[in-house]
Amino acid sequence: MPSSTSSSDPGPPPERVVPAAPWGRIASVTALLFLVALGGWEAYWRGQGFYPSYRNSEGLWAMTRRQVDRAEPGATVIIGSSRALFDTDLEAWEGETGTLPIQLALEGTNPRPVLAGLARDPDFTGLLVVGVTPPLFFMPEVGYREAAIERYESETPSQWLSQRISMPLEQILAFYSFDTKLFTVLKRQTWWPERSGVRIERDVRKLANLRRTRQAPLWEKLEYDPAYAALARDIWREFLDNPPPPLPPDEAKRMFDTMIEELQRDVEAIRARGGEVVFVRYPSTGHFLEVETRAFPRERFFDDVVDSVDAVGVHFDDHPELQDVTIPEWSHIASRDSPRFTRALIQILRRELTARGIHRPELGP
Image: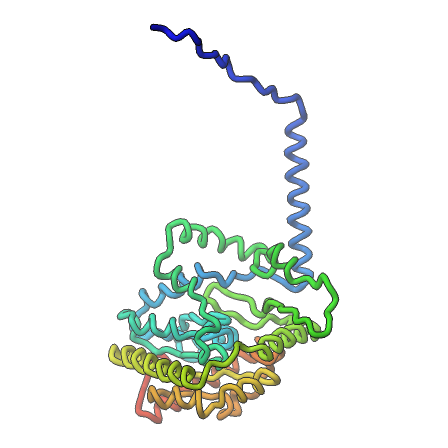
C-alpha cells in the first residue's frame, strides 16, 4: 500500500553566481602583495646577518647516515654533540687525509645511541671519532635527539620527498630556517621586564650555518656582534646553573657502570669488523669549562671511559695546538680557527694511534 506521505522534492541545487569583478587585477595585486611581504621578511632576516643555509633537520641527518651504508670500507665517521659538529672542518679534514668524513654529530645530543647504532651496522668498518661533551655524554636523560635516528630507520615516502623539495628552497631563502619561524620568534620575545627571583628560560639561538655535507661553521655573528655573543653566553649560563637534580650515589654509580659496559660492547663490535674508535674532548672555556671541570672531573669521567675501552683519547687540555683558538661563547670554536684546529687534531690522532702500532688509512699516509 503506497505511503500517504510523499517525500519532498529538494529540487535543483541553488546556483551561486560569481559576481562580476576584475579578477585578473585582483589576482595580480594579491600576488604582488605576497611577493612584497615575502621580500620584506627575507630582507629583514638578511639584515640580521642570516643567509641561505641548509636546515639541520632529521631528514638531512638520515640522508647523511645512509652514506655509511654506501661508503667504501675505511670511511671516517664523526659523532658527538655541537662541538664535534661546529668545530670540525670537513674540508680541512679532506685536504689533510684525502677523505671527506661523514658528519653525524647532532647539536644538544648524547652521541651514545648513534655509537650503538654504528656498532650494530655491519656496513661500518672505518674510523669513528666520538666527540665528548661532558654534560651530554655522561647524563643520558639530557639531549637525545631520537627523531633523527627514527627518521633514518623508518623514513616514509612522503618524508623522503619533502626533504628533497625543501633542500633547494633552503639554498635560496635566508628566512627558511628553524630560528625564523614566526611562533619561534614570538616565543623568544621579552614581553615582560625581568624580575628578581623569576627565571626566564630562553632557547638556544642560532649558532652555526650548515652545508649539504653537514659541515657547520660557527656563525660569524658570534665573533663580530658582542651583544649576540653575550646573549649566547647568558643562555649557556642559565643551562649550566640550573642542572637536573643529582641522582642518588648508588644509582649514579650503577648508571655509570652500565654506560661503561655498553661502550665496551660497542667499541669491541666495531673493532671486530676491522674498525677503530677514538674519543675527543673538544675545547671549552669560561663558565662552561668551570662547570664541566667541577661536575665532571676529567680523571673520573673522560679518562675512565678512554681507559675502560682501551682507546685513544685526545683531550684539548693536553695539546697547546688545540687550545690556541677563539671560543666566542665558551663552547664552540670560531669558524676562522676550525680548519687549523682540525688539521692539528688529525696530526695528534695519527701520532697517538701510531704509538699504539695502529695505522688507519682513513687518516692518510
